Length: 115
Image (cartoon, rainbow, N blue to C red):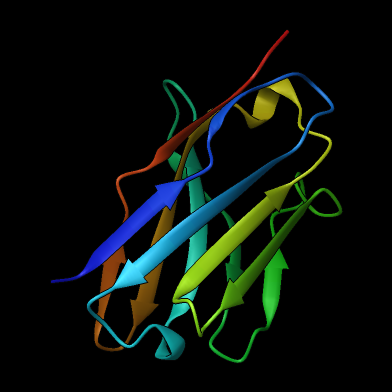
């Protein structure tokens, strides 16, 4: 069956880095656009970054220059490298796979940026 499993979250100090991973299975990963979303406490889930099946990438303004999305189609995995983290980056981060065939979500991983 379809699975998206995020990992790599945790507690980090402001200015630190984390690398999130999302391992996919059960669908043709290389055909899908992959997105990272985040949801802060009491707020709506918002998109953070996406990467298409031809590796075009884009970011929301607040993370541009600090976050990098990438994908390894041989490993069916998408990554989100997060540098210069700020307290406002604290959220549950979710990966999403999307194509004309369907949309799938992972269960999320918590990222907390705090002293």
